[in-house]
Length: 257
Image 1 (cartoon, rainbow, N blue to C red):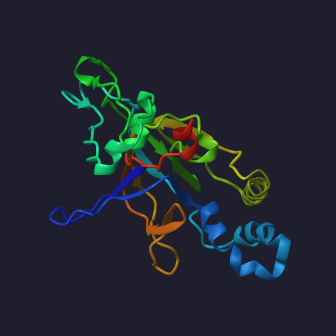
Image 2: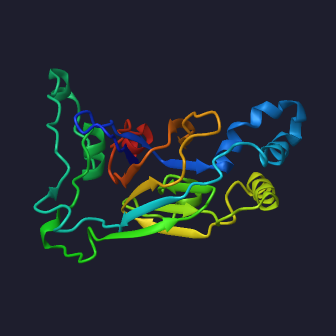
């Protein structure tokens, strides 16, 4: 998953990190959130959304300063003297009647599955891995763009990414009304953007908005993380490659085989 940490002006009470797989900010996402307003257009609702939102007060200017580091799967700089290994749990104690049952020869994999244990994982000694580019900070600017997205490998369109990589994508600068409507309709048909002018694969990204983060009513503008809205503020995003380990029950057919 991605870990998104908002920057807080109060150093004594830092903001808590939030987690997700897809961060979206800009006019296209704002318009999408308004689609239910045009419910009476039925099957043409999505097309009407981009047409009538083209002159609304959306996040047309997502100008930002971006600092990012190159992706690193693990080296002596970022994970020094860390040896990863899967803890081996103790096998459950046998019941008295189990000693009376005939013994069945199982493969090592079947024994681990039957006992609820993880198969042994190879240990990784990151202290012997060198990556000179790890931790190097690069800077770039996004100027007058209206579409900024950060995704990881869990999104269907970015399955090519490695677990330790995240992708920053941004649309072109100074998008016209016609271009906005055309791109919105294209996204509705294809299900993905077609006008990326900036794409950066990184390990961590810090986005600092430089344009106004409030709308005409003085309310905070919002970005969306997996569909949930949060107020726009500087954030640092990094990938957590092994955030969750999922345990599944053994398959009966495998054991019987």
